[in-house]
Image 1 (cartoon, rainbow, N blue to C red):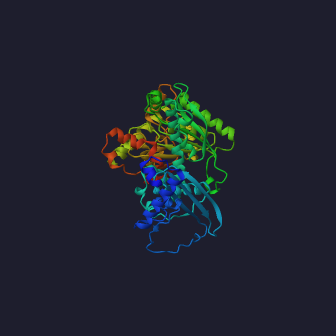
Image 2: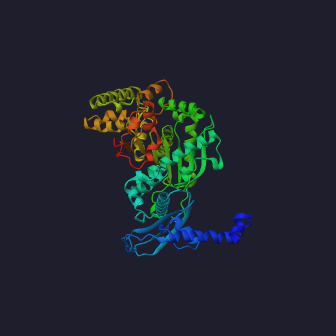
Image 3: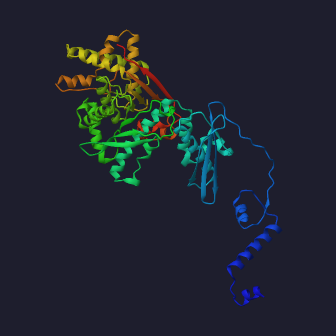
Length: 507
């Protein structure tokens, strides 16, 4: 009668009665049909909440899984990620080779697939381990796809791929890779700081801070050009979390002073280009930007004390030359600051780009003879102190990073290799003079102007990026090829083919 009243007389039904009717209908449909539900599925969770017991799939086989301790001196982390509707989370637990609990974490995620959740769990676990100095890490997961992703990164979704590769590269890296990546990232932070200024992005809208916070740095101060008010440098302070291990602090700096290179945005492009021309004319040391940078480095060394061992200098392109000049000034006073200089400008014709080795050697030998001859003719006895000063700088060994396809810096390769060639042919005395002079600098000095070829240095560790460019870049316009070879972004990539060599001045 109640059903007829509802159907024909428009009678109202209570909420309790409606719920009972829905549950009854669902129970009848599940128990009388052949529907089989997977354990853990969304359907199974809904039916469980409604107190309805469905038929579950029978697993094909049951395998006993036992947790095993890792090898001695290793740490095992068991991770898991899950997704339920719009809610996602992941977690992990760390144990040592004795099975002792070391720590754990859990966090909510903003992702839409289970694979994202599983990979996020691995990424966060590796990052947490590295922040504590745990380098021998054994990651254990129940996701076969995540295991395959460790062997083939193309499986990883595009929005996680860089972070994923960085984790595994950092896990397998030597210390040099990490230090190079940190220095390059801090320089990139200066570029983005200047772009934030131009776009008036402040506070939460700023895009710069991830470039240093990821490596536990804080921004102490910025260096501002007194001509165009652009940000050309930054001072960072290393602030590791209390839980970080001593291994992770090995050779870490307390402060990093980083300098950007030339930007292509009109707000600071013209000022930057004028400074680039100053390098070609051997007058960078006379510019206000160079003086501000040198004074900042000198004040930082004085304020933190010591011999500069807890400070890094880093720069790219124009910024590398500014850092190089400041480093040379400090080295002359006996303070050797560790420096990372990316794509520094070499004010000379890019002879290294000539394919014929015979032609390259002939041009360089002729250039050395010409330079040495001019220096001797103009020098009289004035250059003896200069030679001693150049030799004194040999104890300072900055790290230079160049790309042989980059016309701006590729000549550094030939500059240092030519010394060995001159030594082999018995022309050391000529090269001793030529290696610390340039024809342009000598000509400027002849007219009574002070000049300094900032790019000429006695010693270094030269790292050359021999990684072939992707096919898309090789087919692109030559301007894009130049930008790719000169870009700061190449130096934090994990899969580079690099060749490093120490060059020590010994004349």
